[in-house]
Image (cartoon, rainbow, N blue to C red; front, side, top):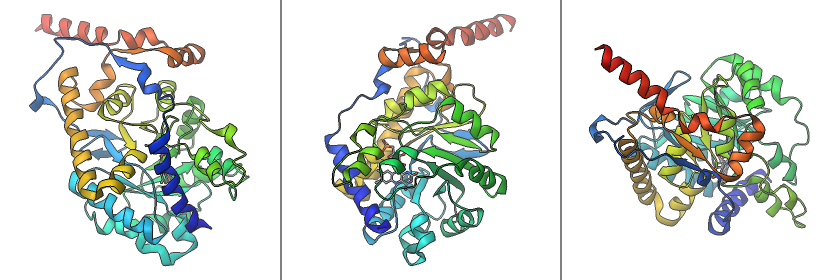
Length: 363
Ligand code: FNR
């Protein structure tokens, strides 16, 4: 069942890439254009640091797959592209291996093809500390992702129906202290309240994994003969909404869910993310054009992100978090209801300027 599910996920995720045209709230985030803000391209770096982790790029290939022959081939392609571009990569859930070690190679290929890269092992929130150590060992992983996915499990025909153990389990795993622990949603988003709880639990970073891209409730519902969980489609908060909600929550945040192009990456960084992940869009490229096409896409995205930073005057990805942003439409209503000050976001570069001018005068 588990192996068949992995192949179903790939097939249904690709179907969504081809057919879905839902609202993506990143379209409701725009940069204020300052015509003289630009800097010189050599001044721009893509380096990012969070939770004691340093990456040369603020982009990663997010968790997808492993566990079957077909998904092992996909992992080889993803790992090759990660190696050639220096982009960090997360595995799919390693539970298939924990239940059946004969599929180890379909995951291990992520490390074999990418011996010096940053590799993240992915487990679910019922994993024991021993399970997570086996997952980390399998991939010689640099960090651990724990996915939380109550909407997916609810729509999944054979899914979990008991979620009460997740909080204490996450706390135990974080306390084991082997590597940095990132908790991620799979496309329904992390609320501010959840991010604050994760901080209390000792987790090192949160990947808000919001709505707007691959929709796992829809995927699982597609595996139900009656499709009777359609009311869970598009459940949760968008990635842009989650990032706004999590501002100043005191925990580093990563962004994923519905990232379509380098402008979405820049928007997510400007909304406070330390790194930005994508899955479905990279899977589509890999399956269409092989590793070469994915290497080209990743290279272009990084190049275009650097171009955007040059135009916007952001020497580093973190600097984007001082750029002025306008929040429109439904996202603006979300901010009003959640007490998020959109006016401050629209004018935030002024305080930096005032500081800069004052320093200039003092010199
Ligand atoms: C996923 N995703 C996922 N996430 C996770 O934490 N563990 C997993 O095993 C998987 N499996 C998986 C398979 C496939 C085929 C896809 C496309 C995705 C979810 C993924 O990491 C991400 O959170 C969502 O796909 C939303 O991002 P995109 O696709 O909109 O960029």
